[in-house]
Image (tube, rainbow, N blue to C red; front, side, top):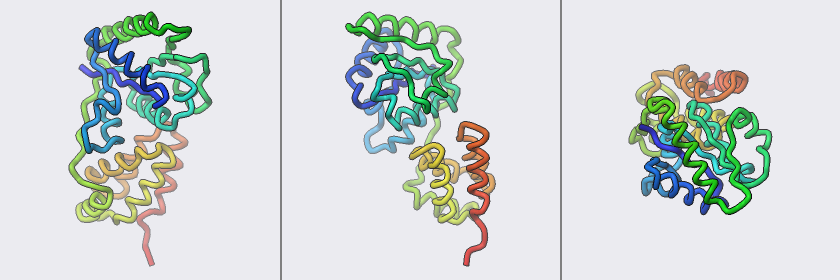
Length: 230
């Protein structure tokens, strides 16, 4: 059975860890950074894996998380992986446009005014209801990152095994980062280890982008990569 991924801004860390404590006291398994990140691990890789394996994401929503690029990337990945999101709103603020697109259809729980203890109890009830609805839904398999070292090693490996120029991998990573941010680094590493050609690599990575128009733009931006060099 998958866990509950807790997304939060650093400014709301105390609240995030409080709600994790309440949920885990009810037997709900939670994943929260930095507590559950393996020492010396690749943070982005572990966060991607944790979101993919989650049954539910609880978002501690506030003015700080509303402006957090990291929170936005985590929400985007959850939507892409079809992980349900439960916003736990601790301030009377509405989502900015970049988050409204992903959260407009979600059920919200308001956690104000204080004290928060009754709101934590209500959150626990809602989380239990969601997890009990379908115990087999959203239990995505844990992805294992290949032990391929840093991006330079991965590019060299792909160049040797699939005939992909390491410089091309670097360009593709930059094109992908435009759409999904720093997580592009991890996704390119993994896709490079699985791809047999440049075309296959681009197709795999395009599938990681939400929105048909953005996928098209990424594919077109990569079309000229791999051409003849002077």
